[in-house]
Image (cartoon, rainbow, N blue to C red):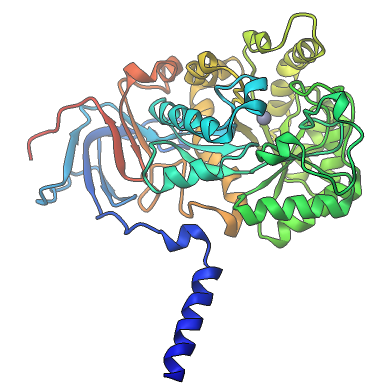
Length: 456
Ligand SMILES: [Zn+2]
């Protein structure tokens, strides 16, 4: 009796200690098998396609790649796809995405009920996957519930590497308060963006540590701080450096104790240099960087995660507003940034940072294709697959999807696109995914297949 009571207590204690996700973990699905015949492979790295090949996917991994035909599994649920000599490539990765902020306006993102925001984001996540983006690194926003729903198979969407709330100083990029909300009472109630998990304000090394650790507890795979001013926030001039060196170091220490890294939003040479001095591993944007900064980023082996913004993105901000003129300043720096990144062979990741526009999200692939202004098609696709995957791997033990991403290799996670044509010759194929991506597979599951199954 005594022993049984003790067991019950232990079981209860264990149940309370377990996170909710673990208590309700669904049974793993049976290992589906897909045989993709007769394709030429862009493996995520090489500038050339392979010869005719056959690829066997079992469960969520690529099991075998062979130049010789692979015998079809005689299981009833084996899907056989005749690639017809088309191109098989890794699923695309967007290294700077905001799953919760693609569709709402800035005001809606703050004022809407978070449940509604999540539902809208879920629909957008499905569209994101159907554009061929099988993984995103989320650089700010309360994406944890949506990530969970996607991972559980409730919503179709990309893998999400979540940062959770981005962390800002008072008045920095991410402080969306109105002036009448000042002064903030120390220890007082959270601001609206803190309540919804969009951004957190921290004004000392201790506060930074606490906010970083909160995001890590929520499941952040990396941490995002804003080290300088930003376009979309109302109170931060672009030229400012925000967190002190000690504050940035506190974040880096807390993240590295947790086995992962810090990424910082930073446009200017001063903000970038301070972030690098503190041990930040990924600089986001850097559109105002100079020659010395590019050299520094290269020397330190830090990642530059950047993008080309479309000109009409500025329409999210009212004409004549500060935000609009900040956007134009950033836009003007883009060419220099990519030119310097190439010149100094900076480790460069690519992400769009699409915000507040469903229309712009439809041009996701076109934004990738526009990188051909600075890079060859093979370099563009390598950046959006295997290079971006290297950046994701910095999450180390906090990587939510351990395994190889961004490559077509035996043993890699099976995120695959079948492209109707050769994107190494015509990068614009990726701009029209509805038409040109005939098959979209994520984690071994076929989410789109416009080809009829071949006879087995
Ligand atoms: Zn961003």
